[in-house]
Image (cartoon, each protein chain N blue to C red):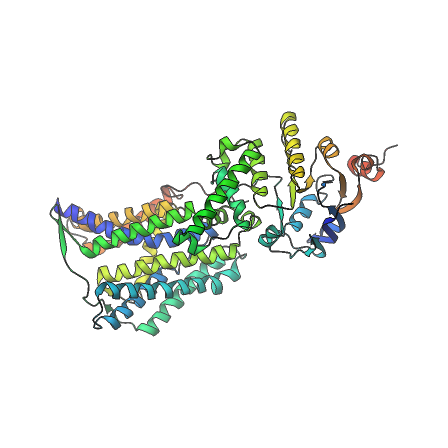
Length: 256
Length: 307
């Protein structure tokens, strides 16, 4: 039994009268690929936003690697080791692919105003290290040849890969991917799957929101299902698929 | 012909100063979408502080170079503190308020700073002590003073430095990332409060230098000088494309040239009806034209929706 990396305890989130998340608790173990699925509007992305500090939860708490996550301080969440990608890609479009990944190194590097002005030895060395790591990551996700292109000029699939590279640049313990396969064709999805498996092999825990059921079922060790902001099921994929509540949520009524 | 060259030289000097100030407007706008109308007052404070130090040290026997350097250091420190405080006190509480609120606040801050300056330095004009070398050089029949050469060179150096900082350093990348999308930048570990503070501090440092340049160039400073200068620099930033660093430089230089040439020839153009003291109309004519025909500015891109 491996240790717990992330524990969500009774997370609540409301927007006015609408409940986005109600009493959601889940536990993600070190080194696993954990799937989060559910119909549209079930609260998956809201959970991501609470997890990464973009939203303030109305109740409950998150324990990550033994530390309580402070809400509303995304830059601290990044420092603790949580990185994410977005359902609708959010790169820095007017910066190059390389620069996007280099920004991802921000949280693990230090040079400030004085470094920028003085250009001392330590700063130049750090800058070189940032660049080297960014090159490695672009290679890792197979878009090294697009390094100097503006992010907004990359193809859709490459933008997804770039977003993953940028997230990896923060040296995360937990990588949260929000529908990485959305809009991808079969070949692209297959190579994405290889990429995610490779990331896990490198020791990074993966939290995956995905609509592509085949991908989720084939890739994830465990899956949680959200419906109307509540967790209705959490288990290994083969059992989740057979759960009547899950079938009902997806098909909008009981079958049988 | 020599009048033309003379006006080009004057325009470059004026334009360099506008560009330095315009950078302050454009950086703040780029990072947080706010037009900091108090920026002109920061320039004025820079001029006043520098002048005060120079007056104090004028008869101290120190070399002129040292006096100027000390004045500049004092002005920069005061301006950076003022810029930092403006953001902390006036703008940060309004970070999530509708855009109009910080804009009106900016005008309020501007009035407060003007009046503070009036209380400290009085309502009189302050003359710049004649400590600077007045040597002039002949260029194709026009003259350029050593001071003017220094202004253009120093401004160019500072702008080049800023561009390197923004495009080649970790801090600059964080600034550009914040400017494109602050909430995503935070997820990369960028502390956007810190980046915004640094932006105000850098802009204010440039303003301090510009303040000293203006008062040295015109040999005069007063509590009200920031208003018109601020408006002109804002026009320059809009002309170049507000939010765009290279645009602010280009807009500043162009506006300086337009104003100088306009002032030099307005008498001939209007048959003597308008004199060179009407030079201010050119800046605002330019502003109106840009806003009507090319609101995104010369090198600006169409403003895209923030995610």
